[in-house]
Image (cartoon, rainbow, N blue to C red; front, side, top):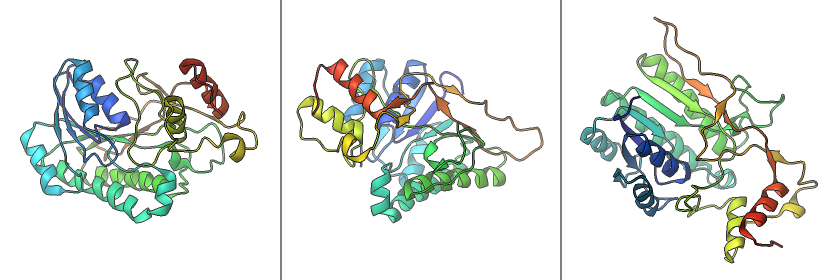
Length: 288
């Protein structure tokens, strides 16, 4: 992937998608976005273009719509796909599991079929460390066994397997699946961040409380956690370039392709109470 390449970003108006679009524009790439805005706003893309000082091309398209997606591919010389689009709330996935399989798995299958028709041979998939489930050994690495415990995580794992099957059938296809924990943070300008229109997360409740809004989520730290200082989780800032635990494997000449897997990380984890304390210190807000 070289400067000047055309990158299609699915879910490009979302939290990670918008930060990725900004980084791509800053580095000289042509960016095309498809997003149906079910959990995002087109305003995020306006802000991306303002910050970058460059234009991108955006389409309001559901990735399950094969004809509409095909028109996007036909209109642009797409070199690489970065695939963020999909539903992403664990709790919601337990309530509407079939919707998660329909949107996440079905949408990815449609995307791959359109890529094959238009001979686009490179894809970066936004996976998740949730696929590991209740891990039997720590620390986790790319070779840790998968054991997803909810429909959201299973939809991620199924898509990784789908990509592996596509590689076996389509040797020219190059795939990397990025598995990460808890993306959190915002662009230093304050113009970009996470503000979901659907199911909020704990950090959304923090932000709402800091703004004086009725909380859309539940902090619930002391009520739900016996010792919230011990619940330490790694968090990945969208504007920092992470390290990987191990480099992706290279395919030997003459062998079938298979997805590379990388687990981006930033080092020390953060407990729930540490997260709340940092928010209060930065915002000057005392939370109940």
